[in-house]
Image (cartoon, rainbow, N blue to C red; front, side):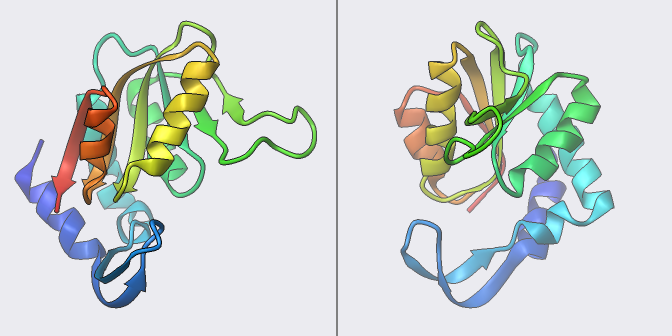
Length: 164
């Protein structure tokens, strides 16, 4: 992992003000993931760094729904691994599925997330994947804002690109 990449991710995404985080807590610092996910050059470099952290035993990739799917797709193009997206709630039409894409029973999955503050969304996605019979072989966070601790406490192998 490049310390320079970590520094640039934090620099480009860090904004100051009065924010409410997804956890409901207030903060004077916010990391706007779209500032790096929407920059093709930075996204490509980040995807390469994340792909390098995907364990060799991984057969699939996944992410929670939302902005992390941009990173998931970029990493998928780098690794050529099939991908799945975990919805927050089951879809209300069609297949009624909460798990979209490729996550068959027995899949050894690397779970990719953009920014993690509490680990809650990532843990919820891991539970859905595991209920479908997948095994989480690693969780990879672009920016760890504290969520890695909860993920490790839950027994997951966690890799990070940048930590605050």
